Length: 453
Image 1 (spheres, helix red, strand yellow):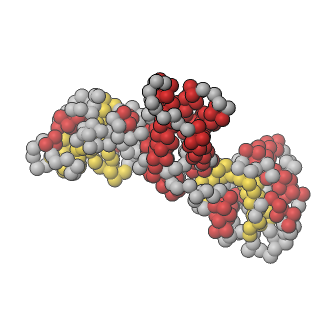
Image 2: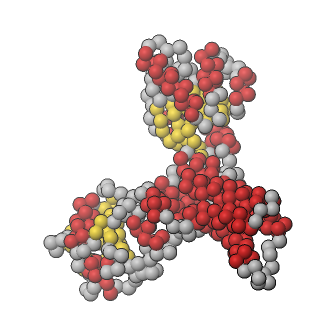
Image 3: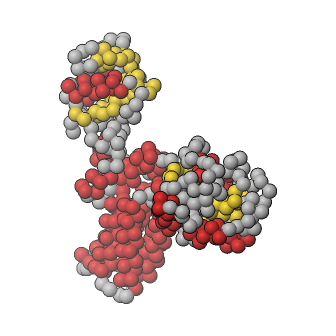
């Protein structure tokens, strides 16, 4: 493969910036732009040890004093010769270094091309490759842990025994069908059914992790609902930790939905602060109230806020009706720092009722615990959670095929019918790890990556 190069750090001022190079012949290219301070050639430096030296631009001018390290293949990230320049984090310096490498014979790396080469060179499977971008994009500690375990091969290790079991069944059936005159022991029907039932159970349990994976990666749409001036925007600000929404004593200040992310109880919430639900006084407010109702319709969690210092009103009840559209509801009696006046017994059927003060920041620990209880991790070990639609769809197809193989056995169909379904299941599982290689599939996966990774 040709030599590729890219800036692997964010395009902004920083203490350190990294330029990465990979491909056969990359060390000779690096020799033309980097000179070790102690003399000699960079290509002769000891592997995996930082070397101090001068980095030159395409015209030979020194642009930085930096550290460089080389990783001979196959013991590198990509499985081929690699090098990295750890420069001062000026975007100008990094661009000059990259242009010098291009002038010396390297080309610009595409999105995810370093990781794609690692996959094509057998250094990782597709679940590990996808875990790289999941780790980069993780927004909670749980998401990072799951991605890190998948990068270590946890999901592959969960799938491989299932694949091998199906392969064993298929090979036994093939032997019986292809060599009927040989004395090959047929696979017992009852034993085959038992094995397929075990595979079905494993795949079913794996498929059940998809919802948790979706929560880990994308977060939970959570609508903050309530009548005007009950403290919805104050709650949003308290949860995100800064003044994201305007807060005033004037009812109806929020005219449109305001969205922000926050992590509560280890769960990423995509919070939507909505306009107060009431009979709108003008066209703009009416549109805001309508958007609030639509946000409730699509939310997986509704945070229903009421003013605990005042009796419930018909507007509170209207907001409660909107909250019913969400999958889960938490009722928040705000302003608990004031004398209580709200009787929320009629709202208890919606979900847990908690006392908070968004302004004072009290009661938020209980809210975190309530959110964590509504979205439990299910006891699934980190790394064994399906985190994207591609994996989920493939496991679903594999499960459907295994159930088809079971049905074929139970109905007494010929072995070729069982074989067909077993092979469909194996192909689907192979797509997850990359054993079943499809160019369009790999292209779609690596399009998610940034350049330089």
